[in-house]
Length: 189
Ligand SMILES: [Zn+2]
Image 1 (cartoon, rainbow, N blue to C red):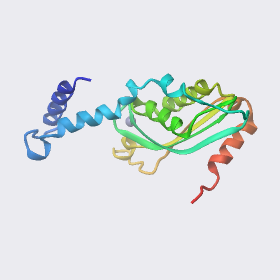
Image 2 (tube, rainbow, N blue to C red):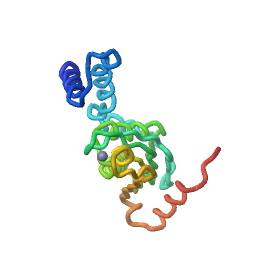
Image 3 (cartoon, protein in one colour):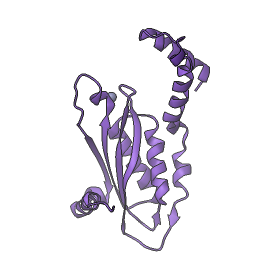
Image 4 (tube, rainbow, N blue to C red):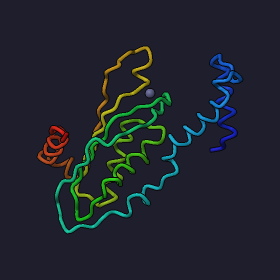
């Protein structure tokens, strides 16, 4: 990303929407927007294999591991406006597991791009599946989209829920049920 180019585009954009880029409050806005965009799209530069390759080995086998309520912030690719919410990940270990922070990093790597919630859900599921050779993976994302909340349709409270199930989560109804029961249980604290 060429910072000078992006700053120039943001300055032009300010003029197009009827603003004066020379007024005091906006002087540093092109610079700030550019650095925000750099961060919010930093997922493009993240190597998923590098994140997942250091999975932890364990003796235990075939137990379901769940990480609930992973915070998620992304940008919808249709409007470049934020959508945000929570991601729940479950997988059945085949002898390898991720440290908790690894799952959050996988979520961030795919979320910090222009996204569709459906595709984001699929990408996270496949990265977890491949990263630890899991026997099955289930991912659920619950998110609110500012493009829906802030614009004319005024569906302020609509929550979009997407899921992706692979392997044992796809083939066994009991496994899916166990996953849903675990993520829907009352939380501690
Ligand atoms: Zn949108």
